Amino acid sequence: MKFFRYRDIFIVLGAVVVLAVGVFFVLQYKNIFTEQSVPVVASTDSNDASTVLIVPQIPSPPPPPQKLSNPPEIIKAVYMTGYSAGSKKYLDYLSSLFKNTEINAVVVDIKGSSGYVSYNSAAADVKKYNLYGGAIKDIDELVRFFHDQNIYVIGRIAVFEDPMYSKVRPELAIYDKIKTAELVSLEPASPEPSRRVLWRDNNNLSWLDPDSKDGWDYNISLAKDAFYHGFDEMNFDYIRFPSDGNMGNIGYPVWDGKMSKADVVKEFFMYLRANLSNEKISVDLFGQTTTNTDDMGIGQIIENAFENFDYISPMVYPSHYINGFMGFANPADHPYEIIKYSMETALSREKKYADFFVSISSSGSTPEEKINILAKKLAEFRPWLQDFNMGAYYTSDMVRAEIKATQDALGDSYNGFMLWNPSNIYTQDAVKIETKPE
Image (cartoon, rainbow, N blue to C red; front, side):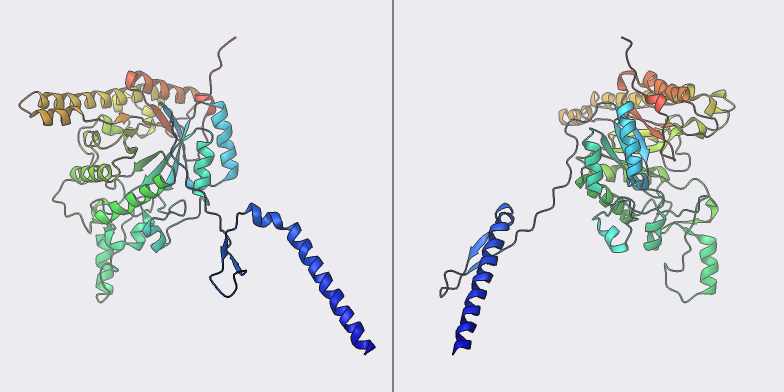
């Protein structure tokens, strides 16, 4: 009997200890439950009104960034690849650049010429074909990094030069007619379009057919997702037909050659505007579209862009003009003259274009038609400028000369510039903040 008495005492003491530990735990961790505002839901069991169900509340992810509420009026941008944008060391370099220079905007690759998408876009085909290249781990964090410094963020999309989408959608890609014919003769039973050998340019890169609507929609889906993540503007590059490589071997799976190249490109310009009607969009054009009146064999005519973009960005790199242009044996040695002439010509052509519509509105148009014509807002110019060594060694004085030429040529229509350097390192002295003498 004595044994059972002691056993009961030990049981009671054990229960007291367990109860004490439980009370201590509740008191210690009370704040965890109260601070997280965990909802307590009463039990639906009518036989036990004291029973409760604790439902943990999972924190919602923060909303994506918004566009800058007060973007700069004059954009002064630098370009970077997705891999640069994904590097903390490079972002530290940019912060110093923002602090010490007039740079107030960046151009970030959404999809460069590799065809890989720089961040994990929710665009359907990026997911379906695994096209994320891993360069930028957190796109929202990157956009916030820039916006917190009041930096305007432009996304760049290389459109038709696209090796990755060409690979996963070969039925939309330009193919090599000669090599494809050789393959068909060796494998006559293999299905189309698997028998097609992708055509490649001089950089060994493959292209989408510029007349492929599926290709159009894919690139627009990339732009829409980037805008969702707070990008302020989208810049479209490589909206053209190929310009180098074995051109005689090119086969087009969609374009039948009946519509001119210029009209195909113009159709895409219009399609972009219609599908991104409430967004800021810009287009990169060959520098010599400012002075050439033909499409140069690539489909780009500057007039076709006037009504369809907010900004036109001619790539007026002096190194890219043919020797003898304006009488200069080496145009790269004359950045001021080349750029001033090019941008003056572009502005003059746009003025003539606008005057044409004004003349139409005053000759027999209905009042409604006149309002629509006069309400047309044409694109503004914001060129790409050279900050890399090609054709000549580009000093800070030469880069400054390019900027001054842009200002002098455009006058009241000056909207800034974008600097290009494939290394993503820029000549700070050319854009440094000028301190006023005391």
